[in-house]
Length: 309
Image 1 (cartoon, helix red, strand yellow):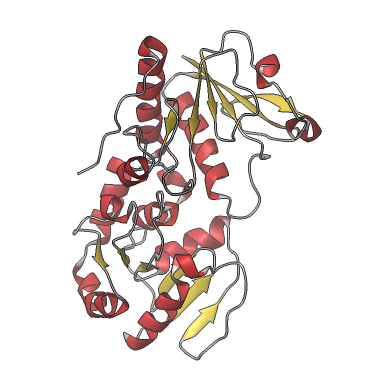
Image 2: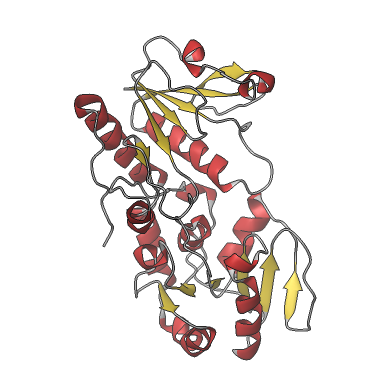
């Protein structure tokens, strides 16, 4: 199959850029499965597994911009990761990477990121994000710290992570976009990417993700699994689909998480890595998107997503 991926972001992204990194991993997965990939993205993008169709960023913001004119001949489907101003003449699907307003339903060609994400948007079509395991470092022996990795926003629950780790008697490393007030048990390292992020994920005793909003997916959870690092989070959004009892613990309150934290020492890093590779790799993501593409081309309807065990 010839798939045309579209994004308004230059790839690869500098910094974290979760959505942008997922697009790169999807291109890699599709190519590894033997499919042809074109990438419609801003000038300067470079993804080795995809043939670039370079777009002028000024055109992307121009009213009425028609992506159809740039889709290469032979592309069977356009997979947009950015909303289109004008539907393409070619068959197209769109991955919703965030949350829409409450009550707003997804269109017939919209693919969500988890079963919970799909349910909240009135559809059953979803594909879990996947990451390339080779981009992460696996370690079974951990250093003496817990980790919070993500935007330092109230909804992400970073304050819960700070207070919870402190009350649980654990040192916490916080990696995020701005500097919070510090205490002796907390170390702030700022935004991290590449090798620095991989090392933190691999060395941490656990990843705190006490989400206070409905996470569409939660990419850092999977990155931690690939690193052999157990998870500690809330039962919000997609977290119950990703965090099985053999790789982490979920609670509803901060007190729950503090009480659950000691039990993470009984979890096997190998089980974390195994779940990541089995359920959330770039290849499993690519296979599920191919299933979506094929059924949509045949029936103009998307199939229901498949939950992992």
